Length: 410
Image (cartoon, rainbow, N blue to C red; front, side, top):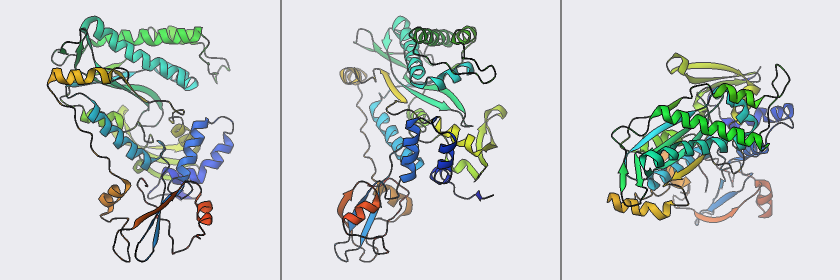
């Protein structure tokens, strides 16, 4: 039995075992999953096209293959995450913040899996309504906040929960003054728990009455899950919510909640080895105080757990509300900055693939190795590599190597 060790990438695992997995689970894999996996299999291989650069002196040609831009791709996702974090840091207000976590009873996880879009929309709205109903009724202000959906835990199993980064205060309802929340207090945790539970249950009952929910079949009884029975159980439970202490700046929390928004659920450095039957990886086991443990999982089970976290096409895992929502931020953020006597932070210039490559290796990828002068852009084409090369009368040879850069391409 072949065992893969050393540096293991998701692209390597899927290139070797995806076709067998897809054949085994034929007809049950979501279209967005197939599209994302096919993207990473083509990432930086020339199948998605390339940019061509030519040395003006010796005419040496270098081809830079295009990246896939999939959030399931470890390298492309890293760059997209860094860009998202940079954009959020320039958009947010220079005030204090709180980091909140909203969790769900485990009984609702199977309902979420069977009704991804409907349930996640219900949950996003429930978090928003739970927060803004309190701030408007008791706080008398409009906060700004981002809600980020995470669907996994450290062991990559399905565990949907929401991270919220919210201003410690907000614009007063009369729009004349910024109102800061009392020191190290945002809102009562017990009251927020009840609002969260009420809004979720209310959303589920409404969706069920409108026949929007599709109930899964239970394997033990071979019967449809009774949603009214689930609601009856979860309505008696205490739902967990974490309200963090006051943050003087949002940078750390934004990096924490943003790092998995556009990246795979597992870092490739955590994968120890892969065989035709098993995958062994490291994870933080919070049952034993967050210590690092090793887990052995069946290969197809590992792939199934990974792909269940790929969102549907166009589904937004990060949503802005209150002062940060698109419909009012242009209207009120400038006013808030004037009230606070602050200036908006400048957005940092994004590094190009060339900048990242030089930073990582210390070498400029567009300097001709023969002449030591900068190569010039020649042309860019999009599509399978073989077709494009043939169209231009170019054949694969040592004279025109395809450089497989491990960073975002041009």
